Length: 367
Ligand code: PEP
Ligand code: MN
Image 1 (cartoon, rainbow, N blue to C red):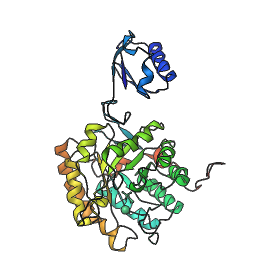
Image 2 (cartoon, protein in one colour; image 1 turned 90 degrees about the vertical axis):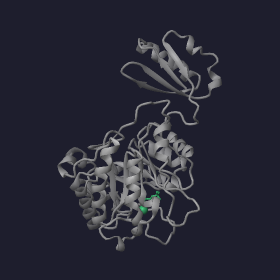
Image 3 (cartoon, rainbow, N blue to C red; image 1 turned 30 degrees about the vertical axis):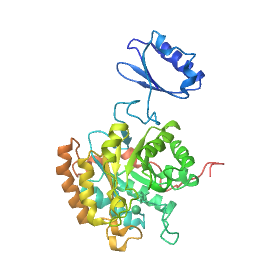
Image 4 (cartoon, protein in one colour; image 1 turned 30 degrees about the horizontal axis):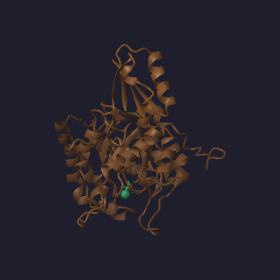
């Protein structure tokens, strides 16, 4: 439920109401606006009987939240959540493209791809170091070596890095190198992992599960927010249907629905959504037209040699073309793409962290 405090409610009154709610077993989240403060209270409504909230002179009204998720709901927070990732703000007036290979394969491959996607206008570099492959015989990723190459690519290009954590054991390691931690489709309902990544304090890119409803997906985001991290980016990446022409069915209706139900930013991954490079450009354009805050696109310098997902990866020329097309489309959706000029991303403080030459040292008792 949302407790809207009166305009003139003072700090003591706000704290008193929060304390009463907490005593009754509610978790309280304060949103301090320029005009009013609201208290988001999550807990068992029946325990409210002894607190006549609406009778308190400092309370304007109490609004129940009907959706099963609370903190992720638009009712709880009407304004869009903005997520700051180094020099990039996601969820605002800019469209951001995260691009790079499915998997980091070598230092040369990721440095070259980072340069290519940056020059074309991408603002975030993607690349998997731990790969959740359907087959145990497929390439599983380079692990920490891959993370080090990603950090090196960030140092050289200024592009923040998004990469996946596939289990709780590797979360601290991934958090040490990454700017955004990706939770893959296969792990969307791995609640222990969601709670663990939330604690890193890093922005979390939460992919939609292979067979997850939109409600289940937002509830997964709610797990991360209730664990203390409200920086969640939702990513539609296609769902399982009976269709076989594509690897998954990209559910673009999720974009306006999420915008309606939640304040969290949503991006679209048409690479996994279609599974074939030929359909990626059209669906990326459609996602932007539908109002997505960004895209995640797999790009490989030579897709035919890729160790994973080559069939759905764009080559550099096709990626450049896509970015050109997006510039035109974005203009009509109220979002802007940054000029594809490298100077816009220089942010030395951000790129120097963490010290890549030292590497990750697990804290005692952590791993
Ligand atoms: C990926 O981004 O490379 C990936 C494995 O994605 P998903 O979890 O959506 O399959
Ligand atoms: Mn992939």
